[in-house]
Image (cartoon, rainbow, N blue to C red; front, side):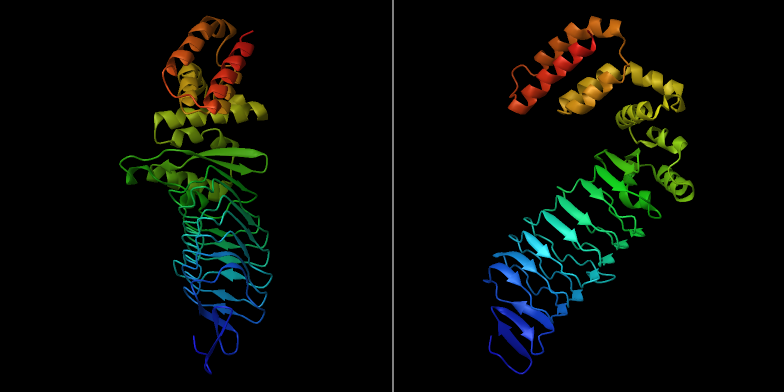
Length: 352
């Protein structure tokens, strides 16, 4: 680009003449990019589709990153936000700043950042993100469609967590629960013809709460209101299975709750009738989990003690027969073969 009194180009990046704003760049820039001190704004789509950039260091002087600034930088692997910027993304926009950055697997949000705008990391390859104390607001769908990001650790400073329904979170660790958090991470079960029912494990201090990712709208509102008003009480913690949208998920949550209740010596707080159902369904649930290659959870149910020693001895031979015939003729991977072997060993040991 020809330089003029308004713009200048340095190493393929276009700045305003005062070097305070980046407006664009050449698509063939590559490798490690260092944005110089003094830059305050990166304009919308400034680095769009710069597919050869692998890492970026942002200056402490930076104040604003506008929407889609790094969209489709497919080989971007690392970004250092510096020690100055306090807000990533703009208010009231679907920012999509890193949309399509499939190789961006890990990010650290520095402690001075107070706000992350809507959809900032939408559809990235994130599998880990470090959210430091100081962060107060996470917008809607910031981590939307980040299918590899299953575990989220939220800081105690967080006051607002935006809508992330239909997310891929399996585990969320937090110290305090933001207002209306349940409504933000769950969805209504009737919205989908073929819903993917799952369990979201909330870890709050030494407590684990097992939340169905989809619930009836009335139940969602009821659980949300209880947590807003009372926090996570024992009564709610040990009765969450009641709000699951299907019998299978209800039973699965029940086993997890029972396991936690054993650890806390609070089994008597689980409804006796439901405990009987868990005992009756134990064998079926073990095979259900094994079919999904979920060894640890299958062994957990065995160790809960729902099967008496007599029952274990009586069914041990049939169990091993069913396991071996279940996978006969199927393609068994090394991992699955190990799973089946260890499972049988664990079952035999538990019945000795």
